[in-house]
Length: 467
Image (cartoon, rainbow, N blue to C red; front, side, top):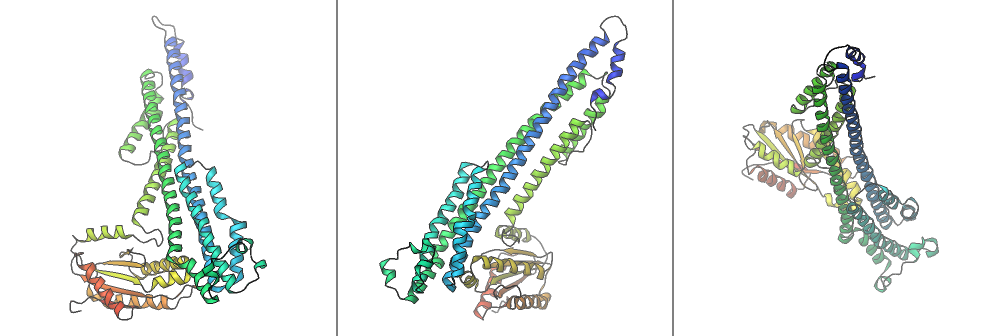
């Protein structure tokens, strides 16, 4: 348990004040100084409580953001689940997928539950409107999905009474009524796989992302406001402590050890931009712990923002912006290097045939395999939708056989998956540089990649001036 100033020698000071002397009584002076010190301590305690309140507000802002992010993910997951089930139903025409679709729509209702929870959080109205737009767009997309299911039911001559009420109530257009069964099935599949449907899905994702960006900004504003208040509180505390030092230079010798010295340490820590040492009186230790907690939260937020800015959120490798920055840095180096441009063959067919969820899994698997296949010092980046790049530092053409072997091994694994994902392959163009990253290195690697694609894909080609 931490002790206050009165616990360290306050009684002895009182005894000395009882000595009879001429002039101003020391006892009276001591009483005045103790009264002034008491007032200052009350102010200090109040400031500490206010610091705790501000810190709690910062933590509340972070917790609110986490909850909002979770509920936004539920809206996205619910929409994606409905898409997955209607697509499976139009492709297989199995009733179980229709049942799963309406189970989510009418019973599970993840999207509606998430939106209801978001309405109860301390969020900005602007952000809430974007997530509401995402749900509205998802609901409008459901009309298209249910119409597609109605076409399938009509084509297969299902008993309408056995279908969900929403499907029974759909009235087909006259031109769709005249279609043959095969044409109805094709039309239904087109409704949930065409560009218009995908554009609507992308709009839902965009509104969700805008919502999260708005929440992030709103959270950061709240944190900055609390941090500013904390800074003002710390300033007032320093003033009170300085006055206390002046008034009690003789009476409170221990204040030098418990307050002034810790202040000096804190100033040095702040100048050195490091956490405060846990030292001094109770109030200062509490202040240091609060400051250090805030310091850690701000450091974690800074790391999170930097990581998000430099890394691809799906695969975890560096993104195009970080790749371009890496190119600029390597232009001035004299070390040899190699550039590999990697393309996932016919990736669009995977997205169209299996859905974007499977496509995302394939991309994550590919990125992980590339990272594990090359050295830890090599730089792996996602520079496009299904396009990756690897910068191999300190790499000469003598390593061609090693690179060829790595690529063949990766294609062998991708062509023989054991995780339930579809087969894929990689086409890779490689170009070497004797010194740094010249301006034409990317073009050379891209030319080599083009040769691989022209010759059947699934392999690699090393750039040659004679190509």
